[in-house]
Image (cartoon, each protein chain N blue to C red):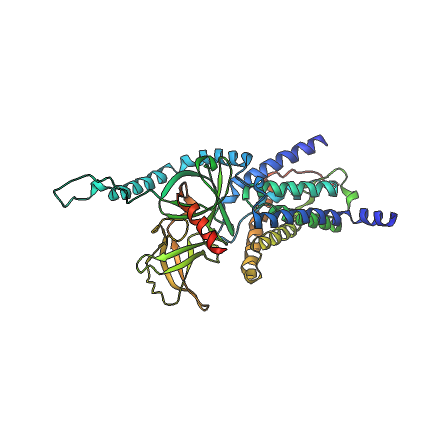
Length: 172
Length: 274
């Protein structure tokens, strides 16, 4: 339990640092900007209580907002992300099967599940974030292309980080 | 009552979602319209200090570019000195000149946080109200206009850069001085801007667009050069596309324009409105 908390705290700091000092400056043709920090919410353990999950998402969003000068924007998107995560996990995972494998990582859940999970959650987050930021229906086509291309970039980074920290374990 | 509690615990995710989403959106909307939540942005002490340290490190990597641009600017200013003009009269006398009074002073500041790829871009600098900076002052750099101060703390201030969907500045053509208004283009390109002119104006390709002096800046600070005469068809106004002269991605040092007579002018105009 204590170990999980420490690992997640380190992950939080690392991802926020990476987002605001490195990835904030990365963009392809103003279309594709990665928002990689949401990996923190994706990798929280399965048995995280809903209240804690929402609190952590809210804090993560506000922290990133403080550096992006957009108070509330990322927080709102992260809270949406937390709701989508709860729905997705309720539908796809039987909790009894994983009592000793508590985290939704690539190495534990397998490539196919993790890829779908990351894609659905990233699309939801980016769609909400970019549309809230622009807040204009007349540019919906341009915003949607930004959503899709940014999601591709973010999911790509998530898969790479998943493979980087890949631990081979026997699944029962 | 018990049924209600059971209902809430069963769907607790949804109710928690509502609570947090509403509070996040409240913060977002409130900040956007009033800019009140100043403790939540990059001018506060914690994030400001962190950005300052990272930019301290990063500035070493760009020393050469900064030196070049400073040398260029020095050469330009040296050309404007009195001593670099040939004096055409033999007679010399001194006049205690009271015609000119200093109107604009400049505060130099280093950029410690910058973004160019959002749809609303802000810049943070390491000077604040202690250095005489106030809200709504203009900001320029050696190459041209940068933006406008939107929030100030003791040691830091935040600039709304030209690359902001709500930035709008008074601008004019350098040759025939027809006045229009400058906005950022709609396609999020950090090198382009749009200038709306009256339909009878005659812009030419490659012409320089400068500040008009009606707003926060002295007259003649460049925005950029015209690259496309018909950027957006239709509408009441003539829209021309401008290649911005400032490279926002490489911004290192900026000057905040302090207009000594701005309070006087603002006070007078406030009286006029009533």
